[in-house]
Amino acid sequence: MSPLELFAALLGAISVWLVVQRNVWAFPIGIVMVVLYAWIFYEAKLYSDMLLQVFFVLMQVQGWIDWSRSSKASDDKIVVRTFTPAHWLWVLVVQGLGTLALGYTMHQFTDAAMPWPDAFATVMSISAQWWMNKRFLQNWILWIAVDFLYLFIYSAKGLYATTVLYFVFLLMAVAGYLEWRRKVREIQPLL
Image (cartoon, rainbow, N blue to C red; front, side, top):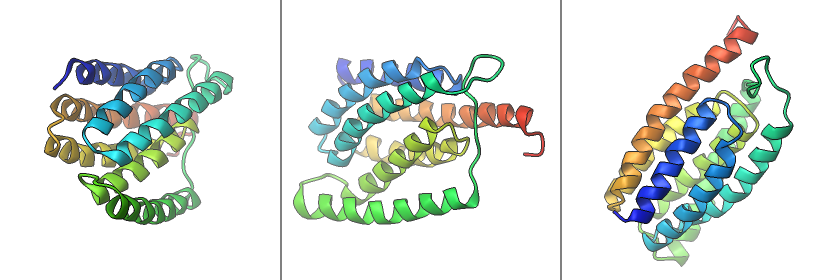
């Protein structure tokens, strides 16, 4: 456990807490966090996660722009939307094809430590981040699943501060789901 990993974990916790609160400041803090984690994962030979952090920089910027320009609820926080069955179908297709492509690539062409679980978690993280940026409630369901998987991946690689962070992320994802669902129910009482 390095001081860099501890600092990145702290920034991650702050960033996700701000997302739960539907606060746009989650994104600039998140940018710093993912840059630090790109280096941490490179050193741990979790190459899919390292590439994911590069992608997350772009997604953090895109989320910052989208949330800054979005319509606001009466309390000046970001408005939440919900999935249709077609959204779930897209998640399943992207998850399956993305995991096959990335897992195969990492298994065949790198010395990745855990190519298949890392690929699965990476693709699910991309989906979760995409849907979070678009302000869909169900992003939290994806985050809950991926955070649970990451507990095993990071502990197996000895990234203990990151494992603790992902346990906190898991708790925050549950809290985020409940908070965002409450907000959706205020607007759409039948959900």
